[in-house]
Image (tube, rainbow, N blue to C red; front, side, top):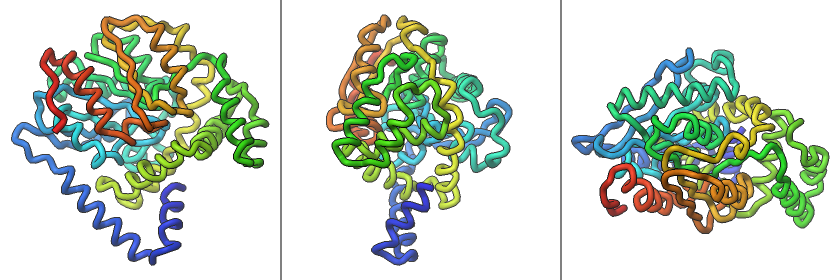
Length: 360
């Protein structure tokens, strides 16, 4: 479990009481940072009945007149709620909606592993559509900006393609492009990294799985992602300095909720196999809304070159592709201010018909 690993690592140097005390101090600072006191702001977290179960939805922003940004998190099972303090400035310019999918975080903690209903890609896709309608009704807006990252972009791409009337723009980051397994370059690159690093155990695991991902189980997908992430220095460094720290110091999560986040990643792995034969080119490269991809320039998990090749084939009213430098996976959270700059200069003016505001 991630939580257990974090505590074990920390206690090598510091007694448990000191570790937890430091965590409480950092949580309190994060909570102060996240306060929204603007007169036209919003800070609401609630459980909404989606797809037959209670699912956690957060709506935060300093001005309800700002465009609404609906996020679809990755994983599956990896809540974006942990990044609240890192992305606090986003809420000055957008009303940010975060949602823990079934099998994830606070939604999982609410009713437990045995009461998540159907954990499938199709069911979660319908959940995303329900959440979209809920947000539009709750905030009284016709369209929202759809921002999807990592595995969430698998849902996001399909929502944007099928329902352009619900979204003012699509923004993919850590954009996951499926091609029914035709391109095995990422797999070969992983084998090369493992061989160069002398990681014999991991190399044997990946060689045994071979390049045909269409036969993998959910556990094999998860194992591949873990090895791919930890074998890449930039991704691994980001996991330690951004993901793990955000998780451990999140002011919105108790220790028990951190445990639910770890369980959610394992539980949600069963969603992976259904996507093995997805083909985004075959599904269509024409989109009826503005289309953006903001990708880390060194992403090995959702390869940057594949995202760019798909983008080049996209036909949309407006489209733009931008690299976030010094970033692999988790690009928007490694460099939240760079991501915000792209949102302010490329997306917000388009959806508001106004000059972009400063990021101050």
